[in-house]
Length: 111
Image (tube, rainbow, N blue to C red; front, side):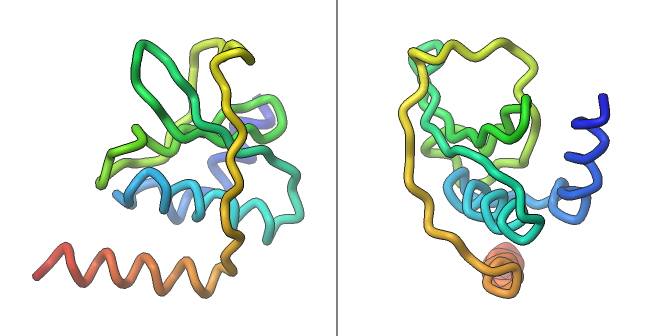
């Protein structure tokens, strides 16, 4: 339960955002890097769909379906089979770069 509270604390400013799945993954990586947390990024194949997920502590943060352009962050509540995971390398952004990325999304959202 403490992990869930820590997730909500770290990601509260970002939980209402709708970004592409890969941009969500970059956002999660930036927040975890800023908080000096360890993590691993994966592509998860479940039910024939590819999802981007980040494993952090005992949690899997879902970033969205691979082709989703307006996804929100959430926690996976189902067990994850290790065989369904493919490791990914994600570029590490600073939180300032994340804020610029979010401003771009907000701008194009209203155009």
